[in-house]
Length: 275
Image 1: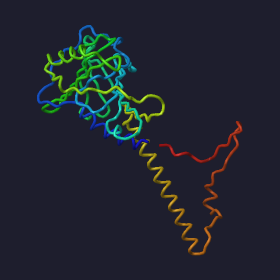
Image 2: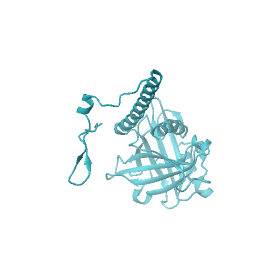
Image 3: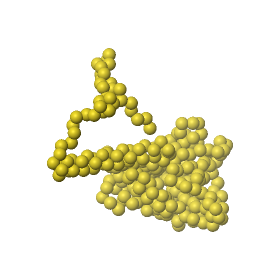
Image 4: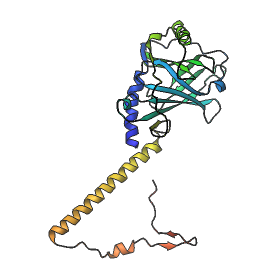
């Protein structure tokens, strides 16, 4: 399962790269909303339109982080690559949000696990908290930047007038509203019969990757042991000899001896390998 996640993560990199538009120069100046209240903004939002993406059924879930002023944003979607197959699935991608300037809470920084270029700005430039919201993200590159705009709704649809008003705001900031793709919110997977794919900040930690490598090594070791055992049996069958089943003196010396504990359970003198 870990290998599947890693492969999908690589495919996710390509999908995420398409969810932005690239431009020369610095990021455009988008004004954060005045008087923004994050506690009212938390919760689930459905993506109505988003810059250049083939994904559908996208939603954002804003939740509190472990520390004050830290938040998490989880993007749930139908992955564009797996969407070409009959496999029912949900792709969960979690990033970390921080507020560099507490006096301007609508101007945040976001960092996702698959973002090799680092963190990006995450600006909420308009919302009424109960119906709609507009978000703009931008990431500075060497001589250019990549940007993405998103129109959100508390429901799976949004009226045309509100969408046009948000697009007009984007245009006033120098952001092309025609770069936005319409996101389908119909036929979205629901229930427990779907494959859940989770990519979060802990997916690519040293501990997580080490566990994957260790498990892969154990499987390879089991395979080598099985092949050696099978080969030995074939050899002795052809040679007309029997494999020795009598343990050697050294084997008897290192034999694991079960001992009864006071609790009634058995324990052995074998020391487990500690990773």
